[in-house]
Length: 229
Image 1 (tube, rainbow, N blue to C red):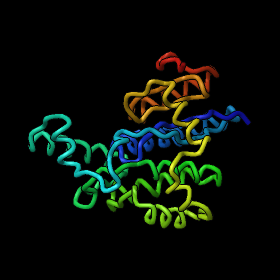
Image 2 (spheres, rainbow, N blue to C red):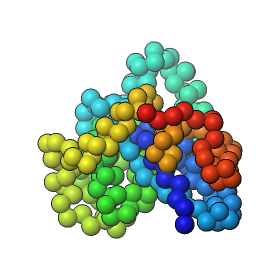
Image 3 (tube, one colour):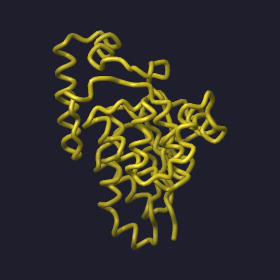
Image 4 (cartoon, one colour):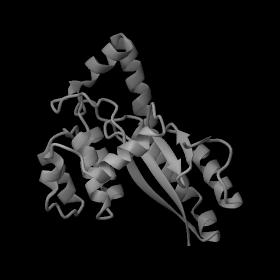
């Protein structure tokens, strides 16, 4: 069986990353028959990117952060939030800003995602993190909360707390950050397809369906993306 290898570059607290992810996986389901006809499957793994690497574990209020960063008025912030919630709802996501009040440092959460990959549970953990943060407002920089999430998705958590609180990243995780760095990523989500093609943005289901359909048929990546260096 052939495998289309997909690496999604994301940040745990990025509002548009779950939307891009849901649109992609929906597109995969929509072309499932075409994939089966070509004896092809799609595999997805996650690569780390931090939008706010200098943020403290205590985090920062989302309203304050966005208004200061973009020089928005409160009305501009509310208009943006309304649009974001609407787009999220279209993909089946719930963004509850009465609970999701802060951005947090995501170093530990990315370490957990890396830890989960070795046990084949990255996708399950990713889904759990989406619900925990965007719907329940969980502090994803809190190691205890992360261990609880890990246990909930069936991870063997032996050694996890040490991994989360270590002074330095493991060499394997460093390699992932370096891989992302070579792509000169400015924003997320982004997708690396089969190791050599790059798609940027939380594109629509239709976009991803068209992309995958062309890829399945011609067995090469269509020209709608940029080469990865």
